[in-house]
View 1 (cartoon, one colour):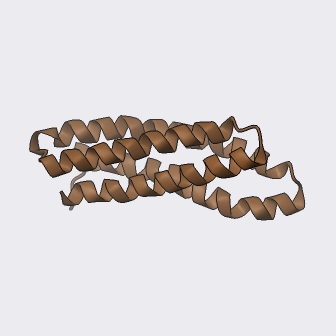
View 2: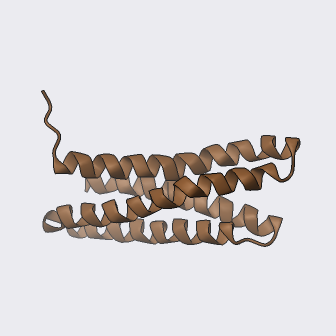
Length: 134
């Protein structure tokens, strides 16, 4: 039998939170045009509902990310540290652009910050996977 460990729990929580944060953004982006056709106010209601799970998931990502770095720090190579720096920039971009999206005042800002948040979130997942290979 496979015995769970703290490492397993740490990685599970990080992946689960990333699934909610990134997967939820992609799902909501796909649903917005359909929801808008039924009622222009519905996408905003759906986005607010998503925010109630997305932001706690982002918090879990940050906490487990710190835990991940602390656990892996002693084996860190220069390549790993560079990759981590890129991931941190992407995570900051994802969180900052998502925050800007929530506070956007125009349709143009909503589109810009929504797209930027989605792209940086997906890129952060990709670069996070690169961390396991460096």
